[in-house]
Length: 88
Image 1: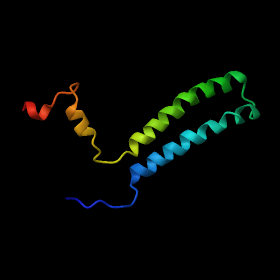
Image 2: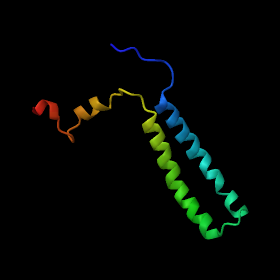
Image 3: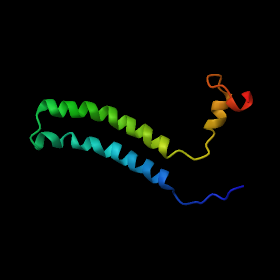
């Protein structure tokens, strides 16, 4: 049995950074018109930010997920993916 360390690893810090950036990034939207950006650029940036912020939240959760999580056991129970090890 391996001894697990209690300090946060790189995955945890990267996941936290993705969460912070995904929440903080849309703050730029009201600043764009003050910088002289046109309404078209601001609207385009807003639309892209809605999608990217959600994707970054999901990516942050996936990256920061616990190593050795039960996802393999879940995949073994599903009928979608065949069990390659048992087939051998």
